[in-house]
Image: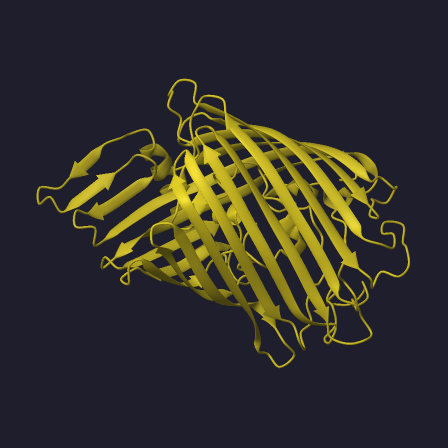
Length: 449
């Protein structure tokens, strides 16, 4: 009964916000103390900015078709699913307190036990320019992760992140983060999180993140950005899923929110996974206690933008240190480089607070804005625990390279339509029939309110 009432409320709120998109303007009460904005969701605020709330959301409907390596039997497969279906509520209370609540109806964030929350956080901004945030949120690591999923250039973020998928996701845990803009040219943040993972004594695994960005040029259409990232967690006396299983840019091989490739989707294990329990165990794919000690990741960021042209790149290096002489360390490296150009002349927005790119706002309301891009991804996993070949994994470094070309049409400030073509090639890792390359075409319709 509660779920039915909640679903009804959510549907009504969503309908209200979508309807509000058709209107524009500001309504002020007789006392001139409240302003209602209906352009881009529903926002209500007091004129002194002490209190506010905004109801919004995002809907991303994806379809992909893929073959060869991306499927276990080499035949073509496809997926049609909601990548994200967020209802978002955020605002201000007593001027110095901010709150944000994002619920994912596609169930790609969170779990049924912990709630399908993408974010549930409270921030204090009274110590300007310092922001203190607590709750459930994604820790700060990387330029593409800092950029909202609404405005990243490619449909899926770079594959280097998949080498260590814990670094910038909340994993249903809780965290505390402190961030600040420094001297109008830099952004710093640090955080500690307790993820949904415990050691054998029931003590939660702690994760530490730090990010430092120097951006002497940070205006829209004029950006120069350098960044360093760090993340670490202590896995001593902890059982966990240590597998490195990248989707390589194609979410449809295994996802929630609709229909994916099912049992035919190939999400191969590049490394990790030593000491796994048998597949018939009640907890398969969990690495035994004592296999690993520390897990550390370093990263680097670069971005440059001038007018409608932008270039960006990131590098990631991970070391999962073995906890005994019986095992070897697992090492992984990855990087990407991306070129993007807006054919209609608009520039990508940039925000120093958070050190991230933002939306492209079309200047022509009839034709919108058109963006094209190319991205190259490269990843490598060095796991010397792999001492004998199998039908899908040979001894030696597992590698993959991706070439992605794409186009984004920003029809207006609410609607974005994307199409990406991906060509993947792998070394020492294949599908069940020996394919070490594959193609994919994925498309998305996005509505933001």
